[in-house]
Amino acid sequence: MLKIRNVVFAMAVASAMGGCMVDGEEGLADVGTAESEIVFDGPVFGGSTGIPFHTNNYDPNDKIVGVTIRSAREIDGFTVRYASGRVEKFGGNGGDENQEFLLFPGEELVAIYGHSGARVDSLWLITSTGRVSQKYGGDGGENEFSYWIPAGAKVLGFQGRHKAPGPKGDRIHAIGLVGDR
Image 1 (tube, rainbow, N blue to C red):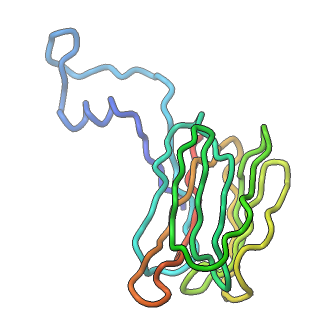
Image 2 (image 1 turned 30 degrees about the vertical axis):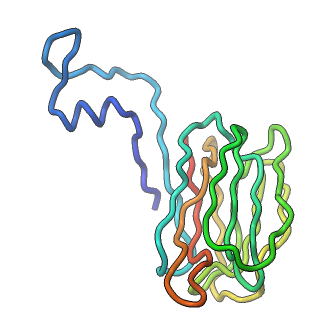
């Protein structure tokens, strides 16, 4: 099931205010049929503990250019680097820092694959050219998962759960993709 959010600010404001000022006159704003950005959350795979995280990027022009994953037997954390230079970091600092998985010009992230249990045990990243990253993480996790974004969509970032209390808390407990249409 996909959760879909319309992120057009004008619609939210007009709806929340029950009307607004348009050219000095009170009334409902006609937001017309301008092209809007639809952001969707794909399914999340893994455990139910930890704190939810969600990418902050809703600019379809700011594409992901690299992902660095920290892992040992599980996925400890990861960093996403965008073309604008912005960086998002999720999870902890445990495990080994793997070499950054760089996306080539014109290439985009389109899928994730892995195994999970209470946390994300292993993860592969798949690109629009069919290139697959190295395997990150270990051999555990009784649940196999994979998710391909819908045709015509674009990955904007990630969502999931991380940083639960306890000795294994600073890890990625669940992971999923965030995209736009």
